[in-house]
Amino acid sequence: MSDIAVSVQNLRKAFGSQIVLDDVSFEVPRGQTFALLGRNGVGKTTMIRTLLGLLPCDSGVIRVAGCDPATDPIELRRRVGYLAEDQSMYDWMTATELCRFLEPFYPKWNSRLADQYLDRFEIPRLTRIERLSKGQTVKLGLAVALAHAPEVAILDDPALGLDPVSRKEFNRDLVEHLQAEGRTVIYSSHLLDEVEAVADVVAILDRGRIIRQGPTESLRAEIQRMVLPHEIVRRTSAPAGLLDARRHGETWEVIVDGAPRFLEELAASGHAAQATGMTLDDIFEACVIGRPQAWASA
Amino acid sequence: MFVHIERGSSIPISRQIAEQLRSQCLSGTLVAGEKLPSVRELAQQLAVNVNTVFRIYERLAAEGLIELRHGDGTYVSPRRTESRSELSAQRDKFGLEFDALIQRGVMLGFTDAELRALLTSALATARKSQQ
Image (tube, rainbow over all chains, first blue to last red; front, side, top):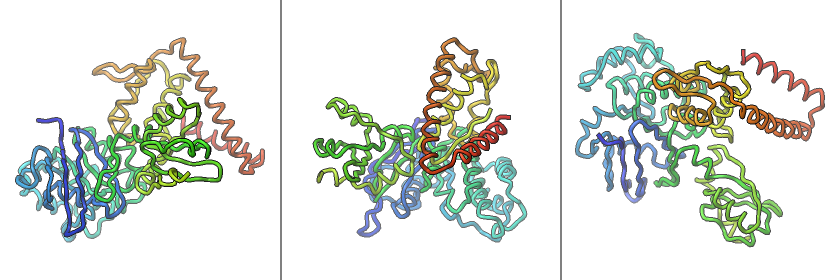
């Protein structure tokens, strides 16, 4: 077995003339949690649906738990647990009925495990799904996605529509039932502050491309904000990795990806500057809608 | 063991946890020989990535503050003589941060009495959560 649980190389997908995924590549090592971040409509769900073979890709190579979704979709589904965004379930069934209904589809379905998840997630067994709360429905979706003990779990915006307490509980379940058992997890979200605690690696998807990828700690170390006097900005050429530059009178507020190196360069030319850390939300915003152009006109 | 995480902070979660554990080891709040929760337990308790907690434990072990005993658990190490100077360095740093915070409070127009009241209530909360 290879140590890479999911690999995507040069994936492209267009709907008609609209390119939704443009040359996307990433790898997720076994046992890691990979968070796909992006604003609404940037292609997160399309990405996840192509991983599962629910949508064909135009070009590129995908391997999920050793399977190619194009040629081996059945085996892939046996090895992967999937929780769709807005998972629709037969809402006239009860949780028990749903489990009984799903069991024959999965040779490795473990009804004792399913039972344990229903217990631990405190899902009422005999209530119709239509009468469960949003949080209970998401947890039921997770329980049935995990009941066949999949190698890889793919969760499409699981925290969507959950209140803050349920989101935290959900994160705890993710840590307890997936990470602690060594499963590989891919999940999408647009809530960065939620993702930080749980993810090993985050990838920021924007307009069909992964524009930045890395462990949250290294993103925070690399991408920092600093305040520079106008004189320095005027005399220095824009650094590689400049994400955002705004002038406030005689000072500039700039955000640089590769801040430690830029600070060294500044120091070498006799300018001392200090950088401050940013929240993940700010980092995300700078990557996605930062405007570095102003530096050049200084 | 008490750890408080502020989500959405500009300080990375891993550093928040590491700094709190470090302070508690240096100050003796965590007593030498005390058994810490396992990596899994702490990850679950805090709802934080298992690998993150593992790396924090490794870092603190490398600093000599805790000891990872294979197959047994994680224990607080006895305090070394250097830890006194580390503790005083940490306290100095805290002093500077505290000064800056009070400065901000003054700039925001709090009266002395209001600032004292804030300190008293923050202190009460902190002592309560420690017990």
